Every structure is written in structure tokens, then in C-alpha cells.
Length: 319
Image 1 (cartoon, rainbow, N blue to C red):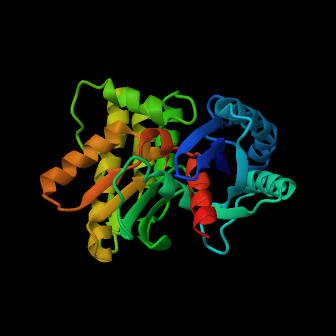
Image 2: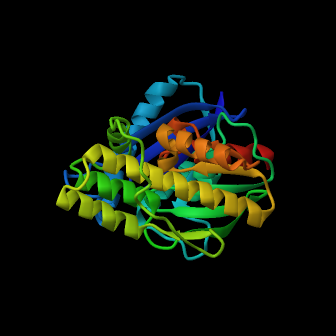
């Protein structure tokens, strides 16, 4: 069997994946970067060092998962930067990209570079109906909260958060509540434990026709609640997801209106939340909005190399 391998070494996860000619993900292996209790991530230098140690481990796990000695690696792909912008750069991605280049050179096969964001948007389409050649993508993660227009795989920035990212809000509030980093799944469980409905206590600040917003005020308010003991932890967690659902709904509606499309895709680690997905669906239903919003599958919403491998396979077999 012929496959394309993908590498992604982000601020959260060391990832490798294999995709076949039909675009099927044969295996996807990930390992979170270890973060000490009470901290919200690693410095770039620390993360680079951890990736150097973890890439061989996840590669070994991938090989064991594949379990087919007759597999032929036809090409290798990797994320080399957070975004496609010429000035987009982050040292962590160079670890995966370097391994990909070395492997490709040793095998005498091509190595295709992509951006981390491209990988997320590709992975977000797994298991969904195609959004078409023109759609709005909302990338929600610890490093990005961007509203994008995708036209035949070309991305144009429409808006997004002007300060804090959605994943940063989730992680910072979660860690302040005593949860481990990354805090998303635990914060969602905490929110689900709340027996009260959300009260929409966190206002969302929007500008430019709802295309841009600010999230730092929500973090500050949550910290005040925690310090002063004004709200129980479950209620605070629920208010965070309620806040995000209102932000996401308005960004999507504004983005689709500005782009002239009714198709939208929500990707990134924050998009893996079933609670957030359900809240957004209810809000869109209440507005009567005709836009069709898809969320990436939870297993492919967080940082992973499956989208990168899929893009590499598409590039290789369509070239």
C-alpha cells in the first residue's frame, strides 16, 4: 500500500499521521507536550526540546499502528509555520518540518510544506459534507481565533479576535480554577456539572460589523469571580462556554454575510467541544439564520497531523 506521512509539531502536541491514496487516515498518533501544574504552556525553547524527544516515540507508535511492512512512503508533508503568511514563524514547527525533510531526503521522495492552519481546515472536513470551493472558516485554538474566507484553498483573513485567543481564554480560566493544561475537556466537564442555566454574564465586545472582537475582558472578569468567590466554579465554566457560543455565532453570521456564502466550517481545538457546538446550533436556530455550519470531528479538531498528511496526499496524487 502507498501512503503519505504528515508531521505537525505545535505548541500543544507532537503529531504524525499516514494517509492513503483514497484520502483515508490509516493511523494518527499524537502525544501532548507535558506542562507542569499551574502553568499555561511551555516556552518555545522548552517545547522544541520536548518535540525532539517525542517525534521518534510517536513515529514508533505510528509504525506499530500501521503494522504493514509492505507500506511504501510516496511523499512526506509537514506544517512549517502557523499560517501561510510570509512572516508567519514559530520555532516549534521546525522540528516536525526538519524531520519530514530528512525522511523525504533519505527515501528520495518529495516533501510538501503547509501551514498549521491549513492542516486544521483540512482535518475539519473529515466526516463532513464538502463545504464547497467557497466557505467561511473559523479557526478556534490556543494560538488563533481567526475568521477566514476560503476560496479554492486560498485563505483571506476577514476578522477574529484582536487580543486574546479563544483557547487561551479556556486554558487561563481553567488553570486559574485549578485544572490541568490544556484545560478544555476538563472545563467542559465542569460546565456540564452546573445545574443552573447560563446567565450570559460576560459581554462580548465587537467591532467592524461583528467581524472582530475582544476576549481579554472576559478573562479579567472570570479571574475576579475566582478571586472573590462570587460564582461557583461550574457556573464560571458554563459562562465561558456561553460567552464563546455568542462570539462564535456572531462571527459566523457576520463572516458569511461579508463573504456572500452560506457555508461555514469551525475548526481548531476549541471546536472539539460538544457543549460549544450544541450551544452554537441552538443560537443559530433561534436567529433563523440560513447558514450551514459544520464543526470538525472532535478527534481531528485538536492539533494533529492527519490534515497535513491528507493535504500531502492530495498534492502528490493530483500533481
